[in-house]
Structure formats: structure tokens, C-alpha cells
Length: 112
Length: 112
Image (cartoon, rainbow over all chains, first blue to last red; front, side, top):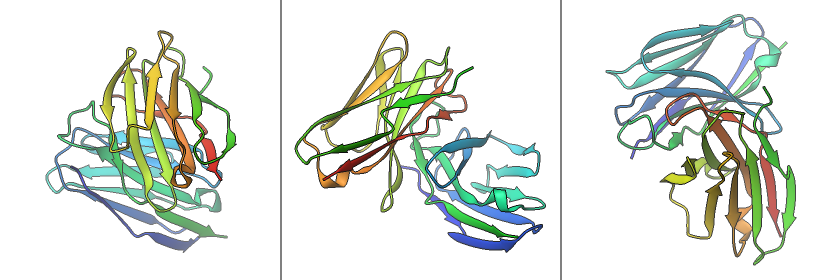
């Protein structure tokens, strides 16, 4: 079964700083998901990526399939980016049609 | 398009009772997955339904069950509720079994 490790668990930064959150997994996968969860519980899918790099606004996600590692970057961070960021990968063989297993999340606070 | 909807949003039940939660996916989405989120265990995969068939199941006891209807709407049922079943239950829909998932707002279940 795939194991997912996220770091750091908690991160407090000042507005404008460049943020990096890391995710490592143990079994080869077809795609990795980055999710954002705000207080109150709602989850938003930020990225689903299987190789290289994707960018949405100030968010950038990269993945290195060989090293089984992904990073989520936030440029010019803003207090509204404060949330829990969660990495998720398929549970088993990496086939696309697997249930997901999740990291414990990174609790990010951006101070004004 | 309307997003994923879940009903009810909040629920309080007593130990030993049973509960049914409902999820309406985004129109055209055929895959529905269910997840449980607790402070201790984080997000955990419950099961996935596609074309009215359960395709994957997480490591949960048989008290947790679900089904999917021909219009892709899904329900999950928990029988003989235990205090540890108190959690946020999230469903997510996807057009197929390998694409990005879209999460609903969740149902917060409290078992007393």
C-alpha cells in the first residue's frame, strides 16, 4: 500500500514569502493530487499531475516520478492562502482507478 | 454547472442507530468516491462507485456500505453507529475513474 509523507506539518510565514510544501510517496503512481482545505471543511482540488510541472495563478506543482516526490509552491503568498494543503496518491499499484491515500496535510498560516 | 451536493450537512445521532448520507455528483460525472475525515486519522478512503457498482473499498468494517443509483447519485449508510464514527464525511465526483475529483462540502456526523 502506498505511504504518503508530507512536510512540514505546520508552516507560518509572512505575506509575500515563497512557500514550498513537500510530498513523498512509496509506490509508483499514475498521478498525484494536491488539495486545499479551508476551515469549515470544504476541499478544493488544486492540481492533478503525472509528470513535470503545472501552474495555476500563484500556485505551482512539480512532480519527479523517479524520485517519488512532489512539491507545491506558492509565490507571493497572501493571508487568503492560509489553509491545509493535502497531497494524495492512489492507494496501491498506481493504476488510475484506485482509491486515494492522503498525507496528513500541511497547516499553512500566512500572516499579514 | 452545479457542484457536488451533500445532504444533510450536519447530523447528530445516538450510538447504535444507523444513518444514511446522500451525495449528488456534478451532472455528467459517473464516479463517486466517499471519504471519512477525523482529527486522529485524517482523510481516509471509504469506497468508490462507478456505473452503480462498487469498484474499490477502503479498510472499513462492513457497517459502512453504499450504493449508487442509475442517475449517479450515491448514498452511504453506517449501521450500529459508534462514537468513533463521528467525522466529516466527504464525497467527490469525477467524470470517469481516472480524472480529477470534485469534492462536496461534506456531512458532519456527530455520534453521542
